[in-house]
Image 1: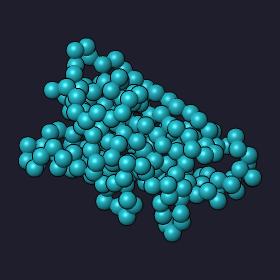
Image 2: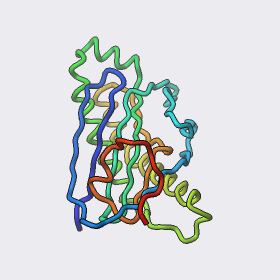
Image 3: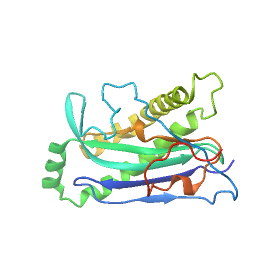
Image 4: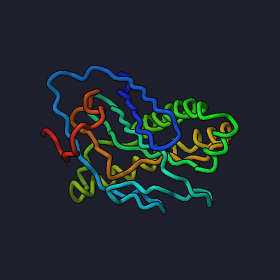
Length: 208
């Protein structure tokens, strides 16, 4: 079985050092991907339904601030995959404390660790998600909402242990969550070029 195509890039908001890693493979010639942008909302107390992600969330009675947006994507196989934005939240007080104690350079290492376990969690989530077209859905919106909820649940399950381990090791409280309005699912062709970050605005379905 061919290895999954993986890509994850980040855009920095505060403190964390910029870094991006990419693992790609050549897509088959002549494939036309189908993409669908979904506006689904995860089953969470955090409102992720707006066009812009929330700047803060509450986790374990602590307010975490949005510090980074990562663009991530995985091809499950040559036909199916998903990409979207994944939000990194962190405790601003922890950031300031660690900066004083260890210096700002330590955040470059944190960045690498967050990126590594996030793409691994996304890979695990995509493998666990049934991306096949649902013949029993009530329509395209219903089908995409189900996919988004399934992927979000699987990602949260996969990322919990590495987030906990990261917090214990670094003393930096964080959370990493998908941003459902950004999720784009591929069901008729998935390759490296589809997973590259968008250079133009989102465009709904493509291809047949």
